[in-house]
Length: 230
Image 1 (cartoon, rainbow, N blue to C red):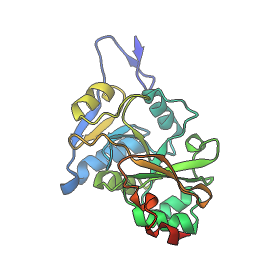
Image 2 (image 1 turned 135 degrees about the vertical axis):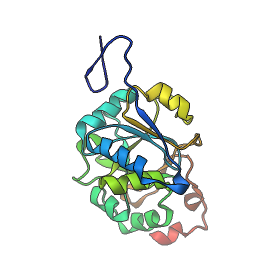
Image 3 (image 1 turned 180 degrees about the vertical axis):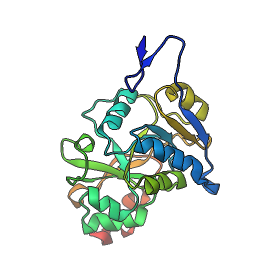
Image 4 (image 1 turned 180 degrees about the horizontal axis):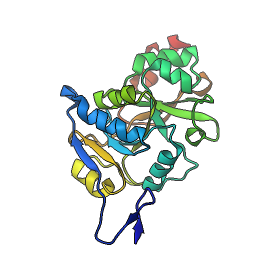
């Protein structure tokens, strides 16, 4: 006998699979969103599309669900994961946002960026780094933002793959690799491979931690408006 990711027994020959729901970001229907939000509210784990790659997500206030995603990914619990917020006001609840940072966030979000900021006490400890920072996203994608709006809480955001492996962008592979470990898969077809660009704004200093989908010319071009943000 094996145990599922939830700890319930799975007898030989039995494989409990996720519900796979197709969703069209351009013509969004709320039924799949509501199904996913119901699962999230019950402490479930979902796969969902973003403006970069497919993500594994849960309600960030559900410790058991966050730990379940760590197990699914085989991720070191000491490595924090980022999450999706609804808007800039929501970000300011979970992170300390200086005037300098605010102007950058307002210009570039929603978009394919993860911004690292000082965490507030509202951010669950599991999602804070040892330096008490947090990574926060607002994807430019209708499904991601609708999920957060309906859940009314931030949504964990980590790529849908095992740690140290490439992100899975093919819906059929998502079901094959993760279908037995998550509750719902929201799929909208194959997505690009590139993850978000990760940028630290700690102490009002810009540090590019990862080059990804987000255009970095704003930070790299000496003639950009960044110098005026200070």
